[in-house]
Image 1 (tube, helix red, strand yellow):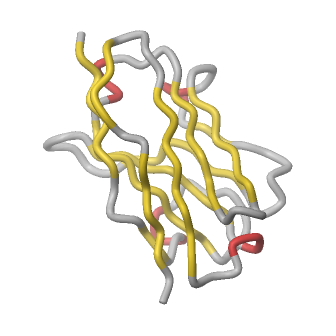
Image 2 (tube, rainbow, N blue to C red; image 1 turned 30 degrees about the vertical axis):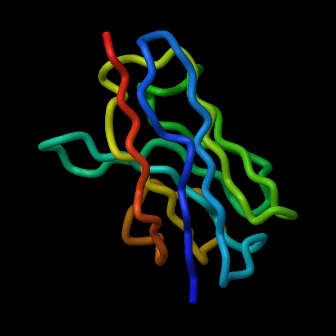
Length: 124
């Protein structure tokens, strides 16, 4: 049974930082591309960042470029999202997802497995 468990969310002031973690089990983590998505209240879920199985590249949504960093530790079957210079508009539930394609993609249907999400709230 595949499980993706996010952690690290919380309440932070604008300009602050958070580090999200997503621990995976039940899959060969090192062969999966991993992505982070988010969903703000009343909005559709959107792509944030992705990293391929090889970790040789990273892909970001424009509004988070230069502020967020995605990384992975295949030995720990964990993907991270370091979020700096947070803004109130970053407030959302953040989800990690796994894609057996192994390549970074923004397309949600390419991700077979999803976590339950972790709330990030940025106050102004």
